[in-house]
Image (cartoon, rainbow, N blue to C red; front, top):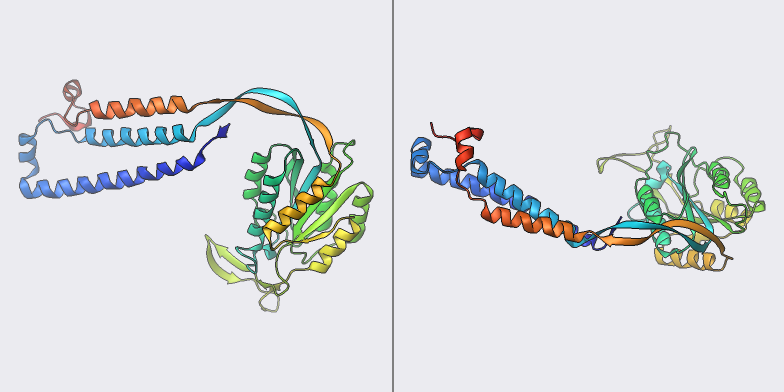
Length: 345
């Protein structure tokens, strides 16, 4: 499914406003009626006044607005799948999700900045296949090698520092896992981008990076953070609770470990990329990938999409007409059934 104009979803914000206005009018009416007459006298003066119908009319009107908004968004459904030929390289992103990535020495914080970088890089790619790995004290697969960038972005946005219980920065495990991602033996160009602050690394990373390079995997590192560093805020529901402290109750200051990242990139036949400027990172990564030989491969994808806006616009029109025709007085047959306790006593 594709959404042609998702900006029109903002029209849905009108629904809670309408509901609030309706409730406000009801309260005002009730107060005014109490000044005019008591409840029993009002029933005699307006025996056909319905309590349920105004609520129903507002509900139908809100439903019409929802249908109109979805119609303007114009959802499209794929109706035909074909094998299409694409040219590209296999690119894997290993994203550091350790607690040190919560540091706010780079706005909004290191992990959000990392996710922004990967998202912008994905937006610049064309025929490449991508995969995503998360790691802290251990590594875990997040997105296998795929051409479905939309799904990859969805999983990427859900990554956070609570995904791995064991803390640390096991870059070596991320590299080992990345080796299993490249399932096409004919693919000569395999690229691994490690996005990290380079701190608290474990194991003999340089030798593992060299082994990966021997298997044709080029490792590039992207450093996120500053050399000055900053404390690690621990928040709950967006509210700061405290800053992380060590065993001596000293506040932990986490700093960008550029030297570690540069060594990994050097052993992996790649290079180090400073991650503070998003535009420069995307430009550098794009130039690296464009300079590599592309492999042609087949991928299944939807090639024909049909508009579905007409169904929602028709539904909105029907609901608006129904709202106009629906009167606020009691319905005769409904009055006889005495539903909603509206019949005369």
